[in-house]
Amino acid sequence: MTETRDGEDETRIAHLSGWFRRRPTSMEYWELLVTEERLVWCFVGESFKSLLLRADTGERGRREIADVSPDRALSLDERNFAVPLDSLESVRLRDGTLFRRAKLVVTWKENDEADSYELYATKTADSQVDDVEALADDPRLSHVDVGVETTDGLF
View 1: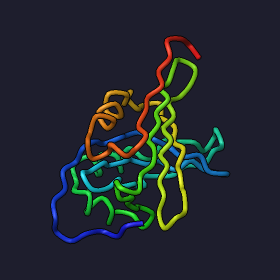
View 2: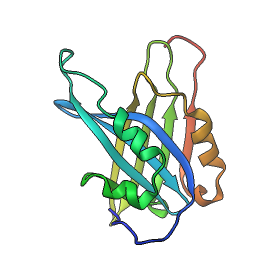
View 3: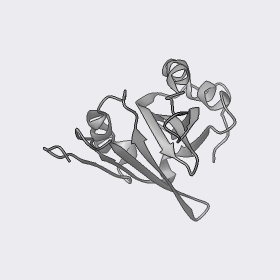
């Protein structure tokens, strides 16, 4: 995982917003900032899986991430990390339906070890099909398997 860089500006290519990662007892809320050099993972909150204790705690963090530099975003939480674009292997989005949440799977390889995160869209997340499709057209991600699966139906 890449540490923060000092002072250099990066151009933001995309901001994938409104995602959560299922953990054994909780749900972690994440924002993804794609720049021309790296994918910055921003932890914005966590809640318990219990229906009585469940809440989307990431709203404040999402607002904070929206307008900050990637370096500043990395410094906001110790769980934040960055993956260099050249380490990315795939970004796959399965668009949501009326009865199924959208799913985003990102895989990368660092130090000869593969890693991946499987994320699901929160209820308030907008469809990000256009954003992911734009990543597929970006020459800086030509080595990455970027794909979108959409369905016309309820399931």
